Image (cartoon, rainbow, N blue to C red; front, top):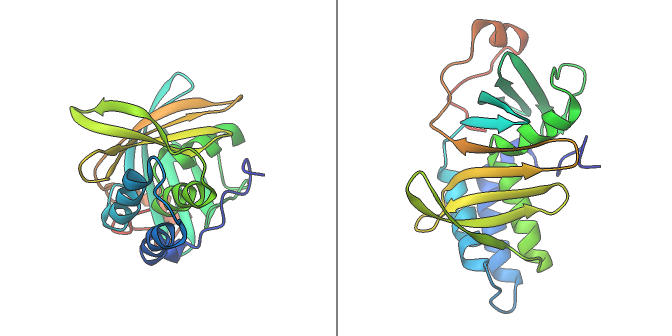
Amino acid sequence: MRAVVLPAVAATAACAGIAAAAYAVVATLPAPQPGLAPAVRLLKALPHAHESAAIVHLDGRTLDARCYRRGAVRVIDAGGRRVVLHRTRIERGPTTFPLPQAVALTDLVGIRALVGEEIAGRARAGLPLVAGRARVSGRRAILLRLAGSPAVVVAVDAATGRPLALRFASRRASGWSTLGAPAPAPSRELVSAHPGLGAGHAC
C-alpha cells in the first residue's frame, strides 16, 4: 500500500537511476505520446536538482520543510516534527507526523528518486501525463501527473524541466508546496537523533 510503502527506489539511485529511467522512457516507447517531452525533460533535470527544502501548505498549515539524507536514510524536518524514511519506506516508529500527513509530506518535499520513479512509471504505462499549464513564481510551467490515487502533480519549468512545485490530494490529506533552495545544515538535535545527516546530500 502506498500509505506505508512508497515506490521502492534505492536511495543511491537518485542520480544514476533517474538518468537511466529517462533513457528507458525514450527507448521503450515506440511512438510519441502526449506529454512525453516534458516528462523526459523532468527526468533529465532531476539529477542536477539540488532543492531539498520546500514551503509546504498542508491541511491548513504552512510548514518550512527540509529533507536530509544519509545513505538509505531520509529525514524530513517540518514544523518541529519529522518523517523518517528508510530508502522510500516510511518508518512509523520515529515518524512524528500522523501517517496521512507523513505520506503527503514525502511527496510534497520533492524527493528526486520518488519523482523520477513515478513519472517514468506513468510514461512507460502509457498513462496520461499532462494535467495542464500554470505559472509558478512567474515561470511558465507544465503540470505533470505523478500518481492518480492519491493525486500527485508536479509543476515543471516549461523551458528546463526543473521541478518547481507539487500538489497532493487524498481523502485524508491535501496540500501543495513550492520547492526552494538547498536546505541549511540540520539542527544539532536532528543530527543527534540521526548521526551523519548532512545538508550537502540532496534528497
